[in-house]
Amino acid sequence: MKNNNNKTVFITITGVVVLIIAGYFLSKSGLFSENQKKIMTPEERVDEYNRLADQLLKPVIVEMAKPVSPYKFVLRSLKEVEKYTWLALDIDTTRPDAWQRLGYINSHIHGKQALLRYESYKNKEMPEKVIEEEKNVIMYFSKANLYYDKALEFGTDDSAGVYYLKSEAADIQRLYDYAVINLLDAIKVDPENRKYKAKLIEAYLNGGRFQNALSQIELYKRAYPDSDVPYLHLAGYYYHIGDTIAAIENYETAIEKGTKPEVGKFLHRYYTQHSEPEKASHFLQKANEAEAIYDPEKY
Image 1 (tube, helix red, strand yellow):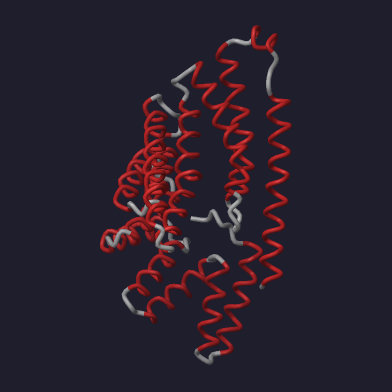
Image 2 (cartoon, one colour):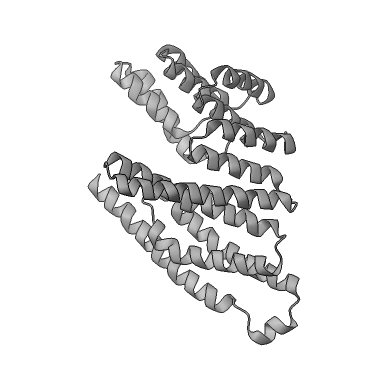
């Protein structure tokens, strides 16, 4: 296990170093000269600033998804992203893509990290740090909400996506009712989006609104009979209320629908502990098959 952790840290650090070097050369090579500025229209300059910001942000998002957080190492790249975004907005304050980007950075990166620090300091009983980070959490998520609303105000082409990002920001803060409100708005704009509907079930469950969740699960089953999503949520619900048998049954149904490998691994452990080697072996095989074919974006 220690070797695996060391390998993960090494890969993360390597990725961050590559990111920093790539960001440096991108920021240098991507800038246009004063002569170019003179012949470019304001709209072209805005497009270029937004292009640079997007290019720099993409690898940051990839790095931040890794198990070992590289937050402090990507701050330089984030500052570049923010710089180009504000340069674009200095020319045209009505660009929704720029406002949406700022919202994402403040909620999903800065805000999320501030919340993690807040919880860490709270567990360590460091009251001064707790107060400091609580202010940061409020600041970042307040900014994010403002920026997302700006994107909506200026007519983004992806209003459903912005509502979804707002719901994720609410979920990060465990504001599940607010997450529900934004998911309902997203679904209103894009009623065929399965991802939004699946996340709505999750938000209802997380917020303890079980009857709402169960109603949505039934609607989801009828709309998407081949999906594993409702059975995964049902399994979680039944575990929550202490009905292990019903939870296991729903996990097995999810396996039949083609679900993520973690479910097969869980059932393998469950049946191993309950001395049913044939079932344990069967679900381990299912887990191995899922490793090769399961799409993590499946809904």
